[in-house]
Image 1 (spheres, rainbow, N blue to C red):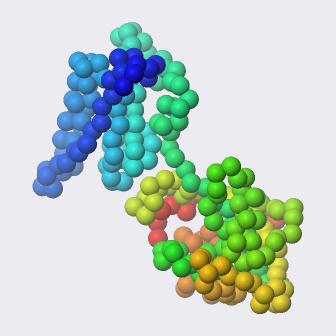
Image 2: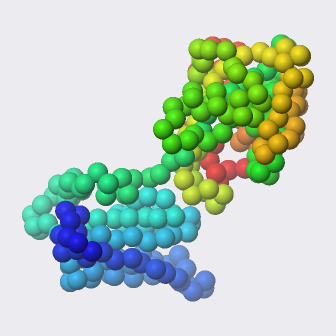
Length: 257
């Protein structure tokens, strides 16, 4: 490739496969081999840009070695600097924004509406595309260029044909670390959609491509119908609506059940 600030000699390297025999794992062999390879490439071959694909289990090792990003694509830049340079000076080497952006963790974002009926019973939709999360609030993933509240309103119209009254009040912020189900962190905003009348609930027109059922139940009865982390999220949102204090639910991790 052409020389650039992150690779002055135009040299980059990709680590394709790192495998350890099952009977000798957890002894540091992978760390030693990868470290030696990176040192050779950096100091002998003058390579400065590195990338690799990792399993979720191996990602912590590569982060310790200096890689950043999701397991789907991890990158690292090692610029050769004078030996007297400090670690902090090396870490702060300038990189073009497009290269730096490739090294930071990636996150997907979503926005939801929290509806209840007039008796404060949560309204949830049954998902046709996510068996791991069968019952969900009205909402979905943000499109490019959208703000969270715009996503929430758009998804509400698409999934239920309802237009929520504004202004939208934020009930909760949800965050989850990546896992085997999804390679990126997830962050979301849950807005208060208000209380729906029985007539409004009966009039919900579900999108044929997405949810296939709407259900209204007391909070406690939702526990048996969804994974523990989903019920914990729903409970946090219900508490925020009830108390008026916005919630931060920071453990909606993809590795949890």
